[in-house]
Structures are given as C-alpha cells and as structure tokens.
Image 1 (cartoon, rainbow, N blue to C red):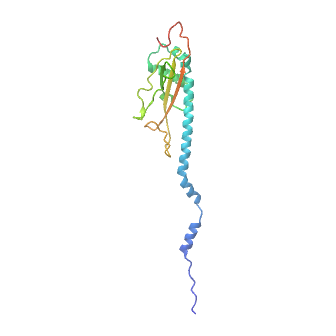
Image 2: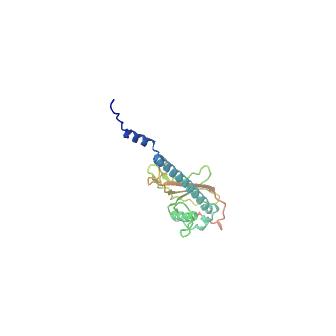
Image 3: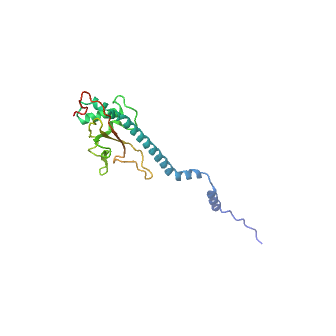
Length: 206
C-alpha cells in the first residue's frame, strides 16, 4: 500500500463561504438602499409643513389687513385717490405694513397681488382668479381691480402671491407656476360697517 496523499483544501470554497457569512458593512448597504426614498419622504413632509405654515400666515395677514376696509377707515383716508394702482399699493401697505416697517411674513409682500370687488349679496360674490392654467402664469386681469367699498356693501378681497418650492420628489408636486413656485391664495368676504362718510360726502367719490 502506497503512501497517502493529503488533499489541499479548496481555498475558493472557503473564501466564498467567508464572504457570504461576513456581515461587516451590511448596515451601510441596507441604509443605501432605503436612503433615497427615506430622505425624499422626509423632505416632502418638511415642504408640506412649511406650505401649511405659510398658508396660515398668509390668511392671518390678510384677515388683519382688511379691517380698514371693513370699518371704512381705509376708504375715508384715501377718498381723494382715484387711481387704482395707487390705491392697491396703499392697500398692500395696509396689509403688510409700510415699506419701512413691514410686518413679519413668510411671503414677499412686494409681489402681493390684490383684487377688491363688491356685490349686492353674499351669494352673488365671487373670488378673483389669479392663475391661468393654460399659460402657467398669472391671469393678466388679476391684481388690477379695485371697487371702493361703500357703507353696508358686501366686499370680496382676493389676495395671491407666489411662494417658492424646494422639491418635487415622490410624485408630490407643489409647483403651480411654470417657474416652479407655488400659489398662495386667500379670500376675505364681509359686509362693510355703516361707517360715517362725514358731512354727507362719500369716501368712494360718489
């Protein structure tokens, strides 16, 4: 009987087994697989929360700013102004504060567009249309309408402004305008108080 010959171990087999059983770096690989959807979902939640905050801030700013129209103080203070752009600039300052002392807002007051219309009944009132979906831009007629609210008149104030968005991941698209910004819009509907016009003169020039 001849001498026995020892078989060499199959190194490739042992190396493959060691590779499959090695768990070092598994956490990094698993995190890499879920990182993109996780970060995208987190960013979407932050974006939604920020938009909700901005919308509430916009609504509150408008509701506080139109009090002058409600009481007639705004109309009486500008009875001599007949140019709609000048009146709307004054109304923007009424809502956001004068240029040198703006109130704290999450939107850019300089870009604020306002429409003021009146009606005979609440059912007949309607908000302005700031956005044109066909062009993806502003409606050209929005932001140039101002009807002076007389005592006891039903008033509809529509305000709108562009608000920047930061992302559009996971099929969650917050972008309204073609430029990528989001439309913030708020409407206030009320009946003006029977304010005194003083000596029978009307604050609205009639």
